[in-house]
Picture 1 (tube, rainbow, N blue to C red):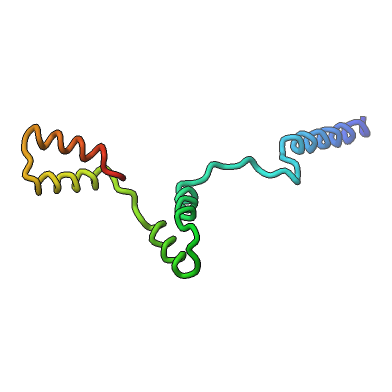
Picture 2 (spheres, rainbow, N blue to C red):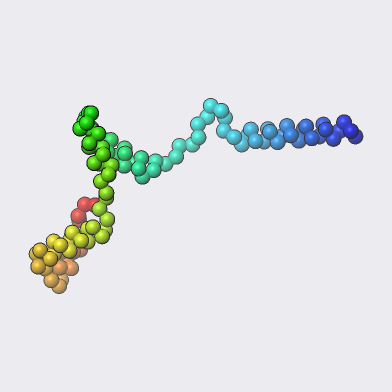
Amino acid sequence: MKKLLPLLAAAGLAFSFAAHAADAPAAGASAPAKAPTAQQGKMAACNTEAGDKKGDERKAFMKQCLSAKKATQQDKMKSCNADAKTKALKGDERKAFMKECLSNKPA
């Protein structure tokens, strides 16, 4: 009995390590690919747009491109409102203009 208990404990410990090893990825295997973050996507898009630019020109372009904010719906609304006011549109004309303006202006 005195020899059986340490033998069972050792066997249990060995099986425990084997179970953990089966769950863990192999040492040479890489983790599954993660989806790119929004910043990484923006970086890829700016990098593509930069094309053949080099040196300071590229650096300046990338800085401007990465810091540029995407226009929000609120920004579009302000711009379209200003345009409608400039054209002195009222009633149904204004409604039609705003619908067209808000749906077609690039973000």
